[in-house]
Image 1 (spheres, rainbow, N blue to C red):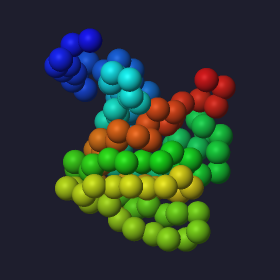
Image 2: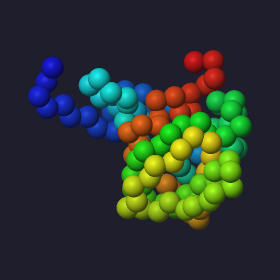
Image 3: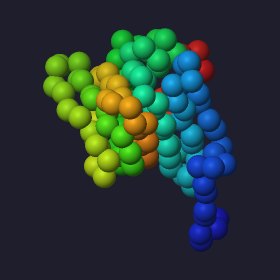
Length: 124
């Protein structure tokens, strides 16, 4: 095991494109832990429109723990709680939510917990 490991999202181990060119998820692996992901959501992206058909659940079932690099995103929990996440914010979003890009700036999020099965087809 190496004492120092360097990875880059410019050469991820896996990329999962979202429907209709609305973004992508890039994953890099970690030693003994879950992959770390960088999601890029283009303006117009909405979970219930672009990811729900891929995964087949009524709402996002991922627990996201991450950091917002750019853009704004509205998050609506199944129980009706809402919030808007912004650049420079740490996020901890429990399973059971919808989300969408607010405005015309792409949203970029780093997530070290919730992307292991995110945007993966239900049959995978």
